[in-house]
Image (cartoon, rainbow, N blue to C red; front, side):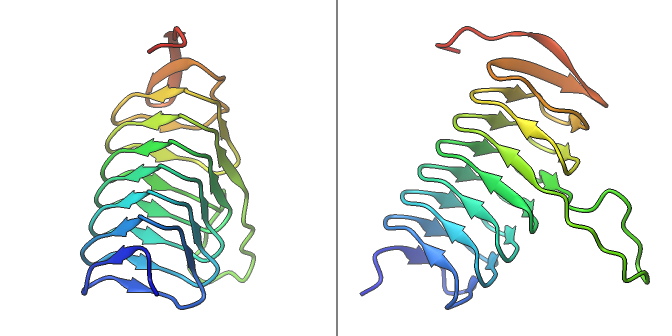
Length: 159
């Protein structure tokens, strides 16, 4: 018996693992080998590539693209239309595709319309301002914003 919700227009591979109480909304796609934790909310038009791992209690807003090589901790928020890359030098016709891993640690929040370049770690409870392009690691409990994203300030643990 299925203990999660998948909207009738969403496509979820039978080889994906979906945690209990998770909701996957309209026109989203979850590929084989993807792992989504418990009590997550995956908005409409979200693409979750093969092998992506998402922890418990995450909120993935509409139009987000999550590609192979991405691991997301628990209680992470990803704002609408955010994109994660997975190859630093992509080419349309070259067979030289190199997946570079990216890590989003527990409690991080990523604002709307961000681009996260592969190979970075976004630290615990870090906050990425809307529209930012993250090209370097973000320390825990830090607010970054801009293009490229730069540290604005440290955050208190309750922020």
